Image (cartoon, rainbow, N blue to C red; front, top):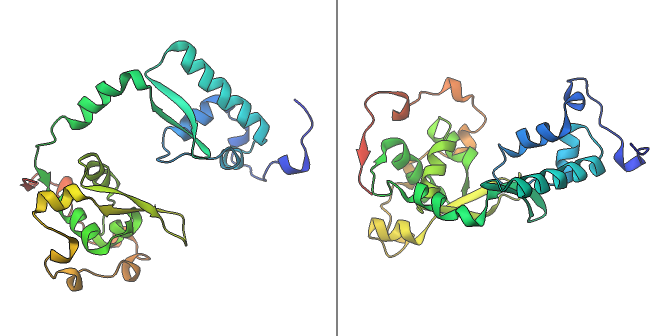
Length: 216
């Protein structure tokens, strides 16, 4: 391996990350990202030179292509992430759309209401208002086409979300100004964001056996 340049000095750390095999470590990290991640970020997290990370990423991408996997590792929007290989998009679309007519759970309806009245809003703020982690429910609402991304939060870089035209169509609304006047009754996310979620009561029906459902 070539000598490191000053820009490639490894960050201090004794947690063993630097000793992990690079390719599997990259795969493990990329499996959990929900947006493209830069080579610089990966290099910092895995405590490796950027050049080594860049080479490993391209080797992985080439390996997946040669093996004709159903997924591929792509460089998009300034970063790397896994995506479905185009020729298998029909299978993914069938899976995502399957059950679209199924009813939304009470948890999904509550989450949708928070986004509708606080949009644009990040996942963490929605979770803060509801008092439970909403990541899974948010993914469901995105898959249903009821929510969409709406840029990023300037202070934190977190992805923001808003309701879609499809949401208005399903709710029979011409615009968000026709939503019932419920916003004043929702707590401000900033007021509860710093509190421990464990200290807040959970009313997520996904945690119990009596989940309520509503057609939407």
